[in-house]
Image (spheres, rainbow, N blue to C red):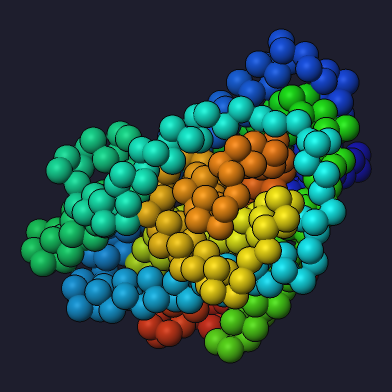
Length: 425
């Protein structure tokens, strides 16, 4: 008897289906507090499931990778090279956002009287707390006083720092460290297996997150700021295809190959507006793309703090857009000052919840925009956040490949074979 062929949707299509269902439910249950609470709970459960495994994966993978590398000078060189790359690309992202806002002049078309304001008091409080610490405090906090506390509270940079030291320590004791190396390799493999299980819940989490957003905002309230949303997405697409595309080609890669390989992760990042949910699978896929485990385990987690190209684009776009909305004409020197402030502030706010919005709160006052003006775009922040998260994820994939190749820790044959497997699908 002939068996019937069962067609199964790929994860990417399942997530897109969840997105469409969530939008539909959000429209049906607009302003329904019961639905919003349930949908938020569904989405939060998925985010929590991913958050639960992110740091164990980072710790175990980084320990194994660094132990196999076993060279503190090489680790220092990789770290310096990675941070320089991140700074250059994020600066380009800031400049691209400012140029697009200046050329489009969309902010002048906005009628502020037609916009409703959203409560941003929690962001203001966060901005005040973060501004007291600044970049210096962030750098000082890299060294944890208690590793387990850093692990429990989700502090990425201290975990990376301790993992590097621990991996180097295992390498230093030689044969005695092999049992630890095998243990952490097994832990990493278990965590990746659990990630696969959790991904089956992704479509439901996505439906909840987008459903709650649409139900809270309503589609009508989005119309006045529609042009800003369109401008943001066009700029982000340009950055991925042109800026990341050119950067990739300089090092012998093709951006379309990268996007094809991580398309499911990009869809997941877009629908959840969370970079964190893609971290385990990105580490796994970049290794399959030929990058050494030590490079992948170091660059991607570090990039989640320092390589936020999408956030940089949004911050510069929004700052100029709001200045135009208030009819504040900025001189070249004022815009250069804004660029410098954004570059410094965005690093100082690394790891702060709602960092992109908090950075804006800390910088717009330098160009004369009232802080209350940010309440006008707070409502659409999540919708733009979906796009900037995709750019952040794509930027980290490109960075990992480039750092790997520059360190000669890259297998071209493995890369080509893995890319070819996606072209055949």
